[in-house]
Image 1 (cartoon, rainbow, N blue to C red):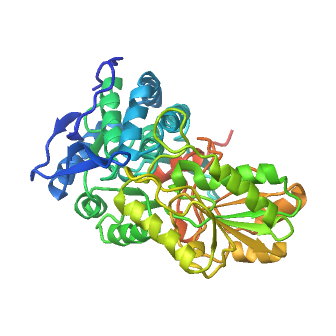
Image 2: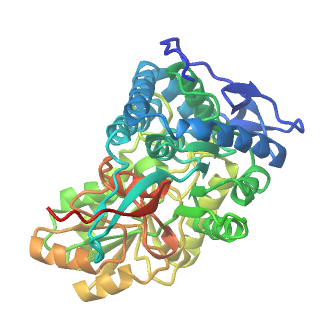
Length: 492
């Protein structure tokens, strides 16, 4: 049932990975992936549609009936082997992630690829511990009741383009730990490292059919995954608009699959009057400019107390000015992922200017090759402006004044989103009081984007439902079954 583990270097393939084999699309579809730093075609990959999804699901279904009974320690060992292979191939994975996505090589290696390996190791620890039920005291002394946790079945995963290898790890690691099988669609913008991960899974010894990955477009492959009658669980990370469609389509499947959605945000960061402004400026900088602003939890609404606003703006501008553009080692900010995203960000910048926000730095394209956007900081932003209401997903910071904490909290919550929030301040009692009132799945205090595999992540409201990472993620991939039976009431 298991293949032998090998330490051969990772290989980039451009076909679908189904049942541990590399296959072309049934109907011959292909798509190009573009290097956003050069605007040139990087690779041509196969493009899946319903026919390919059907084949992948059939492979996952066949594998599930034996994979679900594989002991936890064996699943643990496979996860650990995969993590080791990621580490062994860290540089090559990072270089292709950089070419396909646009993030600097050093960021891809030291952040994305490193976090992915850590995620597999974390859930390796749960593989032999997480499927624990309970015994339940009942009123009838002649009855015994217990719960068991069972793998939910075949999981359909659809991942985004902003953190390709990390988002794959967030899905694969817990579902493997729980004994599920998977059919995943990578983003059509960034399909390459998902295929490289399939090569590593093959080398690690994962059985055929456990992990299947398709490249393709949402309407063709993603829709088919959500509608498939054998899919028991759908996991999606992406925009709130598409998340609504995912939930609607999945509800039409006869199995009514469980759905986990990790969606967009317009996350607030409140800078209190007593905040350490240097620390707060660093927090705001990381919160907004991480990954070129292409982060679902980006601190894109920064509410600053009026007494420190002007000084804080200067510090944010200085930090933005120091950003080094490029994809090479040591650079800070690469290009936006493609022309569509580049044009979208530029339109938001123009909207901010048209609405009267004050552009303190940036506000234009950087260079004439690649989808680079100048790090941009807007001050005097008002709540009714488009840039204060909609998710930009780019390196565009919005700074807004407030007078009272009550006002700041009310404005922070005045959005349909609720993925994350941040607070900077020295009075821990006040800061904790603010955190209690913010409608967000994560609240960072005097820090931002501090990710750890042991900490759950997910949103309120239109930012989705369900939690990824941590022990909470195991709930996404398990069913709770109650077993009850009579027992003898021995009088002794």
